[in-house]
Amino acid sequence: MVPPPFILIKGINHEKLNLYRTRAAVVEKISSEKIRRKELIMAVNSQQTTDREAMGKIIDRYPPERRYILAIMQDLQKQFNYLPKEALQMTAEHVNAPMTVIFSMATFYKAFSLVPKGRVVLKTCDGTACHIKGSNIIIDEVYKILGIKPGETTPDGEFSLETVNCLGACALAPVLLANDRVYPKVTPAALREIIKEHRGQSDE
Ligand code: FES
Image (cartoon, rainbow, N blue to C red; front, side, top):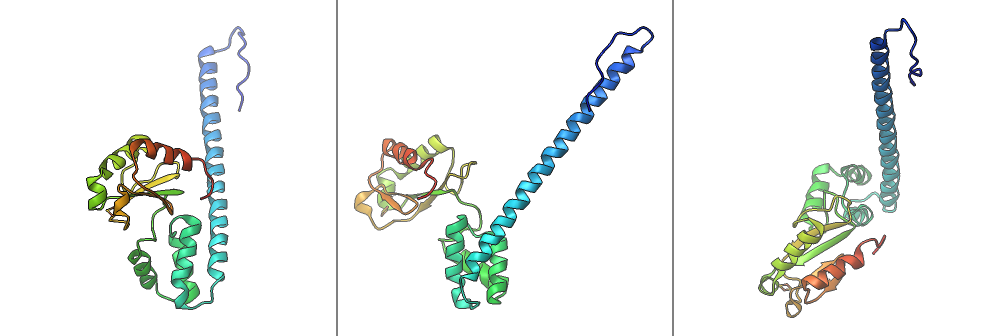
């Protein structure tokens, strides 16, 4: 609501006029905040619908049998970078299995995550050989560059950091994995290049 133009007219109570203007400004602010909130809710709802459709498509690719649970989960993890709770419920319904079975499988395998992971998952090896060769320096450097510690994800959802125990390439220590790509003998300078290389790439 736009307040009327301020005109000095004899006999008008200007104090009341100013009060009216202030109230009108507050009403306008509240209205635009309500609209913004509604738009946000609509965007979230539409994203959830899109996600549900994508989950359904993945799940329906497989026959409704329990032996396909792992394959379904792998595809869901690949698509969403984690296993959304709704997707697990849909999987349970599809193969007619209790949620306890689905959850125990989802938590048993390290390849699955129940929380969203970054588009690029950095895995720093912290096994004995890599530790001796300075994996802790790499972990500290990731924190300096991206502000995340092991188990965390950047707010923009681009990078996650994890530590693993021995990748079986001790001669190349310290070793870093960025998604499925192996980087040997990583130094802080090399790490900066690796992050630069992966940042902004829409797909691996
Ligand atoms: S300890 Fe890192 S690869 Fe073996």
